[in-house]
Image (cartoon, rainbow, N blue to C red; front, side, top):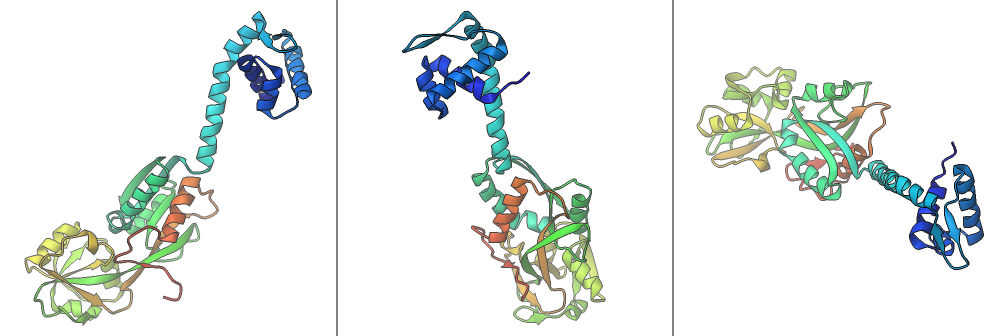
Length: 302
């Protein structure tokens, strides 16, 4: 069986327009070429499809049956083709992102809002995870993109640096450190509220800081409430602070190794990056039209 799209399309045009001349023009071919196309179709089917006069063509009974059979199929085929073109351009499809919590209520909601304006038919799944879980999700194909801070090289992933932020010490207003600049050793002098599995915990351990641990908590809001009530101090990324209530709190810059984080997107090395993922990554790389308060675009020169 030799089914040709142009033959079926031409047949339906001629049936609708009642003219080989008009159908040929709609198909952007000459009328003699169109006549040959229809003759080949009739020979393939073994059924005459048209009764022709010099001015018009009308469907035979066989032509009417064929029109009824193929009209719906052609509409479905053309709709599927258009859907796949939109999929290839990133206007349809699905994108799963694994991201750090600090990114998930920082820059990612901004990016997703803009992305959905541009690509409303793309379905997004966002999974908030701890930093090590973000990249593991990409490795095992649970997420196409991982947004976090790659702390050591990983040969299985391609990492695209996008932004930097800084760890800031959060203290109550009126605290002795307010208005100063802190070092990691500064933390040893005051009760400390630790965000478990956060970037500050990693930096504190890596710098051998002997903190005076007062509390361990899982949520940023809890840590800030404790600081506000004088139970200790804590450290949080600058990128999350614009989204939080800082009433009664002050920020103290930490000037020390590992106080600056490099954040970016990771995907499996050598993997095909879907059009939605590529479009989302390109938007993040451009930084437009995102509000980068608390962030800086990544620069290899700092």
